[in-house]
Length: 519
Image 1 (spheres, rainbow, N blue to C red):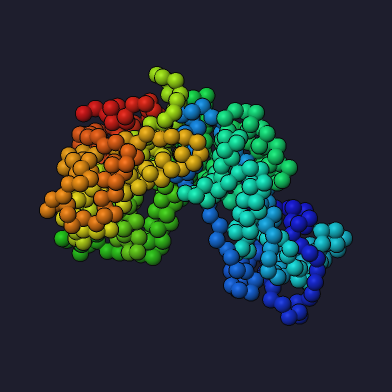
Image 2 (cartoon, rainbow, N blue to C red; image 1 turned 90 degrees about the vertical axis):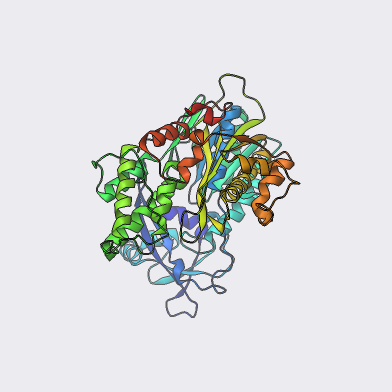
C-alpha cells in the first residue's frame, strides 16, 4: 500500500509528541508477493497493542459462508446468469473510526521522512510525532467491523438488503442482483451484461475498485469460466503444500487413506513403537494439516475423511499419524488437478426449479466413545456445493439411529441452501438419497413410533419435519452407488476413482448423481 492511499482519508494530522498522555498504537510494514506476482507493501497498525473499551469497542465483521459462494455460482450457471468480481482497493481506509486512536509511524518511515522532510509534510506525517486516525487502518481490531458498516450502508443506498441466513450476502430484488462479500472481495451476479455494467459504474463511484470482467481468483481458489460451466480448483495451493513438504516428486497413491481404517480415537493394541513426534516434526504436521484443511473446505471433498483422521491427532501426533499424512500428500500429488465443475443443463432448457441432490451416509460406532461418523454431500448444477464429514454428538444405539442423525444434519444443510437460493431468486428441488431402508421408512412416517426410535432426540428427527412439509423428497440408493461413502470410511482405489468421477466430473444437472456410478 502506498502512503498516498492512506493520507487522503486516514489521518487528521500531527497532534502530540511521544511525551503526550495519550496511548498510541505502533505501526509496521507488511510485505507480500501476490498470486499474480506483484509486490505489495502495506502499512499496518499493531492491533495487538489496543485495549478494549479504550481504543476499540466493536470488532465483529461477518463474511459470506464458503457454501454461499458455491451456491451463488452453481445457481448462476444453472440459470444462465452473468457472474463478475470486484476488489475494493484499500477497503479498510473507508471505515470511519469512532474512538480516539493514535499511531506511531514505523522506524523506517521516520528515517525516510528525516531524510526527505518535504515528503513528510506533503502526506501529513512527520518523524518523531504521534498521529491521530480519523479513518480505520489495516491492523486495527475495529477496521473490519467499520468497513462492513460502510459497505452495507452504500449497498443499501444502491437498493440492496442483507439476506437473513447470510448477512454478508446482499440482494437487490428490483435489479435481480446478488452480491457476496468477503471483506473487500465481492462476487456478484445479474441477469444480463447491461445490469451488471450498471452496477459496476455505481460501485466505482463510491469506492476505488479493481473490476474483473471474468473472475479468475477468489479467496485462493482459481476460477475458470466457460460459456456453459464454471470450474473451481486449488492447484496452486496443493503445489505449495507439496513443495513445503518436499514431496513434489513423491511415490503416487490412488487413495487418501490406508485400508483397513485404524480408528484415531482409540489406542492401538501394540503401540509401544508408535511414539509421539518430536516438536519440529509435530509443528510440521500441524502446519501441513492446517493448510490442507483449507483445500478440503473450499474445493476438495475427496480428502475430508482422511483429513478428519489427521485432525483427530492434532494435539499429540504420533509416527503412525505422520505416516498417514505422507499417504495423503502422495494422494494429493497424484490428483492435484481435480476441479469442481458446475455445468449448465444441455438435454433440456435452463429452467426453474433447480435440482439439488443430497447424499447422506453414516458409520456406526467407529470409536471407543461409541459415537458414529456422518458423511453428507450436496450437488447443484452437477458439482458439490456443500459437504461434511463429522463426528456425531451423541451415541447412536443402532445403525438406524446413526443414519437418521446423518440425514437430519444433511437436511439442515440442504435447507440452508434452499433458503439462500430462495433469497437470491432461485427455487431448489431437494432430493435426498440414503442407503438405509429403515431410516428412509422412518423419515417418511412422521406419526409412527417404535421402541427403536422413540428415545431419539427431536433435533435428530429433523428429517421427518422436512419431508412432511415438502422441503425434500427421500429416495433409496444402493450402497455401491452411495457417493457419501467417500466421507465416512477409507475406500479401495477403484471406489475412490469411481466417486471422484462423480465429485469432479461436471455431471448433467438434471440427472441424479448416483446414476452415473456403476452399481
